[in-house]
Length: 374
Image (cartoon, rainbow, N blue to C red; front, side, top):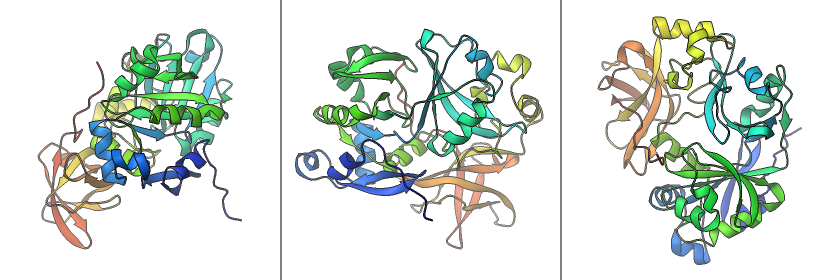
């Protein structure tokens, strides 16, 4: 039997706005749009145009496929800390934190956001492809209330704050990684100031039946277009952000992934979370490989699974995990894992692209500077 493809509450809305839909993480999702009418006057559509519009103005992304859940009870934070490397007990109400679910061997089960909603409990957002695994895993230490009736919309770009100031002043006043319940153009929501593009932005969890209403009210604002998975991927890659299943997974440790910063200072005092001792050994001894930014020479992009060789092409030293063309960068970019002795900025590499060696250089991440509000 073919796998059932799920839909988000905005499925019909996407199609009405000219979206090209593709299967992604078990859902039918927009990869890009072909705009018509008044929207075409703002942007012609397509991955590159949507990407650049987000960098210059603002874009609206449907991320309702991601998993949303609540943990309740005074002890939930401490119980969750058995499974994640972040300081959850010390997370203040109205704040959220990026953290990692780790495995016993020191790998990454998933990356996720955890928000402290005070007496309401902890609000979690996890990756779509991992939500069943994550919630079952977390459920071994504390009960999980999965929120199946919610949509999640992400408003990203330099014009996002101005749009929110008009529609939800309380949200516009949030600091980076702040979270609050407020109405957005009359729609009740839970808003965080965060995102996956490197730009200032907001993620809005709202009742599923109100998602179309909110999307329409947002698009009434100037300097905003809907954008699809294609632009979301190129934006996050320019920002040097990891995609689960590509750049991180159960066979990568936070140390080699360059996510040591996600291990909170207090947790490094005891390493008392699942996989903590193995991760500490990687930190103390140095990992055999590291995630790095890579700039191929010329204009040809190197895609995921491209092998990385020594400059003379004689020795295999790594693999590309994410790669493509950066519209803002105006050139090819990639991330991948290379042997530790080739991980310094400026190291020369050779990429095997379409059977031919392509010179490349290790460069600092991100490729495009972050513009989060501070």
